[in-house]
Length: 403
Ligand code: CTP
Image (tube, rainbow, N blue to C red; front, top):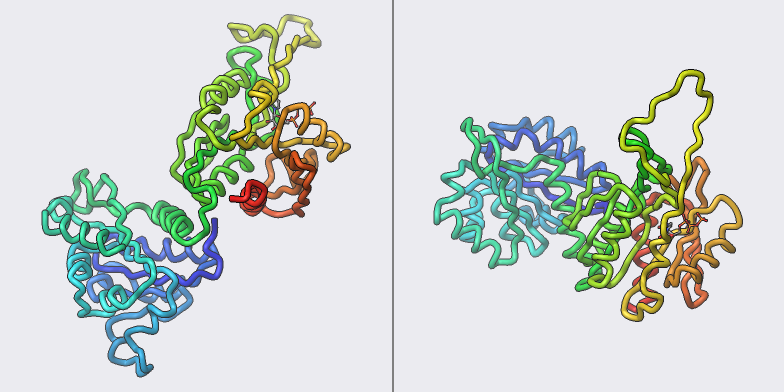
């Protein structure tokens, strides 16, 4: 998910956490957005206007702008420019004014004048946050169609732990991106449950060693994120822990046997299964219960491996109301091998994926492949980032399912 070419108006009001906002501006810009910043008079006590101007690559807008801008729509041009307004930190005072529809400074004027999404990130002393007046105002903003995010419980400027803290810039960024996508992009998977698997499994040899493969889980995580962006409720079964920026039910597994047990427990409740995991095909026939020690003079070690069950092939052959997609990781005969797996594993889609190369496949950020659908329809995706490829795969599946 990105913010390419989106115009974000960041309104900073007078809370101590304002000092972190240059980091938020940078995160928005790195994600492709253009950012303009409005600061209230109180906010200028906590964050340097010059820092914000440098990171946003724009002048910073203060209340003076209302007096000095001689454009016809001086109080409106920023809101017309913006696709999205983020108010962070949002003080109790600005929240109260916005809830009343007051417009006594540039920040509140912009909020009142806009028809675009406005996201409030309240941050204040816990007593102020709990006050019925503040809670009433927050409910009013929600009733008016504004998005209000809960402050975090944590260490407040007052020196104690309580609810009222502004989330870290990275958290605000993720919440903004997810919410904006879900509000503005088509939601073909709304109401659908999507199960995604990610990562290579680890099969124990003894308590300290295992057999595994190079799968990093990146493609699975990207698919989970893209499915969420398309409106789905996502469950992710993963053998690797990576940062996940969407709300999802995450189930951790280690071995192929655990992965299989979890998939079988979940499958009947899911509309789609996207099997990006790379389960090990073999496991140690007899994992040692103690660490295997080298013997004096020993030059080699023979390990007996036994076959793991094929998880996809173990699912019901007929699944008329469920869509199942697998990946074919191949180093040669890509399309022929993929086609065989499509049939043998009773899949609706297989993504033929060249692996064992430097530029795509396992453990890199890019990927490419050909989508082979059950009805013979094929789509080839050129080399692209895994995030983009995941979005493309979801788009193609939705088109195939006429969603
Ligand atoms: N898969 C599975 N259970 C296994 C192995 C693989 O369900 N024990 C799934 C993978 O998650 C993937 C698809 O089957 O979606 C194809 O996996 P791949 O490793 O390409 O093929 P294999 O079936 O393991 O065949 P081979 O190793 O012989 O290429």
